[in-house]
Image (cartoon, rainbow, N blue to C red; front, side):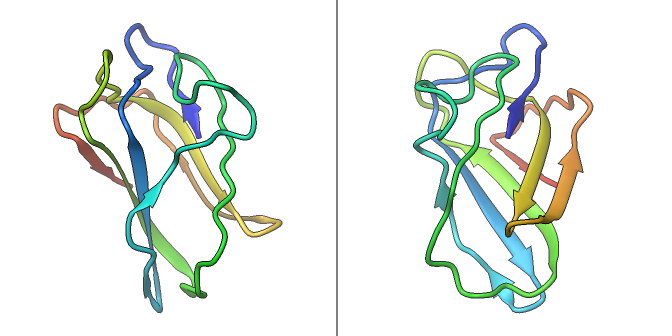
Length: 106
């Protein structure tokens, strides 16, 4: 996930994603430990997360990204999201979309 480069785009909140596919949804997946950065979801940063143990969801149709409002900064903007299974299977480019809600469905 790529966090936007606009001022205040980073967060210390817990960030979650739910993937929706033809066979159901993944449930809340906590994006906790970035493989690329010690502190995830900082301004203008690319974070990579590996999630194991999910049954096949079939063809992905949408994704919900949300956070719990904890921490110092309240992250409401990201620039890009890509879901891969060794090859890209779902991609969303958010052009610095801001939301006054905790959840964005893409």
